[in-house]
Amino acid sequence: MQKPNSGSNFALTASQTPGSSKPDPILIADKITRQFGGLTAVNVDHVEIQRGSITALIGPNGAGKTTFFNLLTGYDSPNSGTWSFNGKALNGIPPHKVARLGMVRTFQLTKALYRLTVIENMLLGARAQKGESVLLSVFPWIWRSQEAAIRVKATSILKNFKLIEKQDDFAAALSGGQRKLLEMARALMVEPEMVMLDEPMAGVNPALKQSLLEHIKELRNEGKTVLFVEHDMDMVHEISDWVIVMAQGQIIAEGTPATVMGNAQVIEAYLGAHHDSDLSSEGA
Amino acid sequence: MDILFIIQQTLSATLGVNAIIFALAAIGLNMHFGYTGLLNFGQAGFLAIGAYSVAVPVITFGLSLWLALLIGIFNSILFALLLGIPTLRLRADYLAIVTIAAAEIVRQIARSATFNDSLGGSDGITGKFGKEFFDLNPFKQGLTTPILRFNGNDLWVVITGWVLVALITFVMWIMVNSPWGRVMRAIREDEDAVRSLGKNVYLYKMQSLIIGGVIGSIAGFVYALSRQSVQPDNYGTALTFFAYTVLILGGAARVFAPIVGAMIFWFLIVFIEQVLRAGVTSNIIPDWLIGVNQVGQIRFMLMGLGLMLLMIFRPQGIFGDKKELALDAKA
Image (cartoon, rainbow over all chains, first blue to last red; front, side):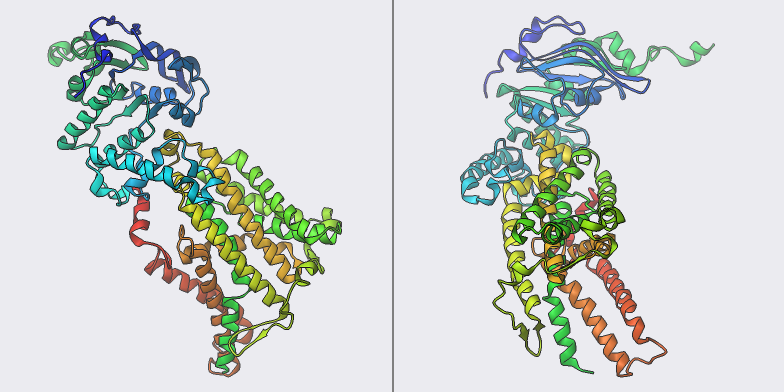
């Protein structure tokens, strides 16, 4: 096991206020707003994500977490705002180019490609494949060696994710948890610098959960940055270096897991302001 | 009842010109629908463009047939771009609506009185525009055997046509089994997932639309050349739906499905018709049940019944995998 790099140590020094600056941010977003009709789904003033860290994005349902994810990865366009990844502005950059820049996402509703086999799902992830060009596809001898190399890599990731016995099954034949694993494994085939996971634990059984957690920690050990949306607070506590809390489209708190979860504003956002008081006495 | 005659008619249709046309049209649809998930309901439009592109340059402008074929390919690419640029960024159902409308627009323009001089209006174009092709025919005497019979021109179309079908199928087979084909099948499953892996989905869908459309226009070439005539109303929506029938009969997303589907389709149509006709003329089928003039309609009814039974008992088609089809529910 590698020793955790500086990515997880920044938490000791960074300021625990919403929109605080980080020593080495990989992703910076400024004044991002997204309205759906009259509803402001996202209104993020400023946020920075530390390189090499595991950052959790939490918040009650409807807080705008997934919308924010969609905006950052090019799946949706904000009404206003700028954001950059590795210093490159991402405004108006389509999703596939965002992925090529090294920011790869997964989806809340898992998008395994059902009528492709598990190994095909994996092979698809690799970048810059010659055989994916329409003109070169008809000359197998041009791309065959590259394909073989990709297959070696895919096989080793599948082994690591314990999906290797399933490699020739259709992805649809996997369980919900295995599909989550496959989606994450497939994202790794793109060789991302930053992985964005939208609710990686939703619907995953406890045994698989533990292995997913290990995989996410491993990503950090490899120097990758992880940003994930999650409702499972145990998981957030266990693996994240930093937690960002959203409510009603805004970032209301950020900091280390321990500080954030004791934050009165956060508790209020989740449970309501009067969750501690007695309903009957309040009414009387 | 002349059994040999029935066999001869049926086999000649199974291997005949129409089977080639529908096989080609369905190969194009297989690229669109089977491999990429694009709902193109305007394949007839691509055939019409192919057919008119062969006839018009030769008859109206006196150009060479070979040049006309190139013009046809060019036009079908243009048509695919025209359809694809506004719709491929949208959801799949929009493409279905736009393509069905676009194909009808092509047909209506072709049959309109405005372009009577160049496109021939509702009568279409008839003339010897295939002369350069048929001049190359080494089998001018045709083929007459007890079980198979083609006249000289048909035999030449059938031979070149099946060679073309084989070539196109072979190239398709290589392509869909390449990484390129893998991206296509992935797009069929979920475009957003493919985008998240860094692929330009729009570009791939456009490539699919163009390739399938060009193959459709080649079917149009065969249609026009084999009859030495182009009639606008042959390119209505029914043509598209028959091509879909052929594809689903064989099994979508299977390389050989369009070929076998087209053969079965024409085998059934002609076999049913010939049997009914023979039955009626020899009074085995009584006159009060089916008259001679009703045979044409009844063969389509029986054909429809057959297709319904197929969809009930073998929904995956001849080559399909039922387990794979069941996955479509996205459980």
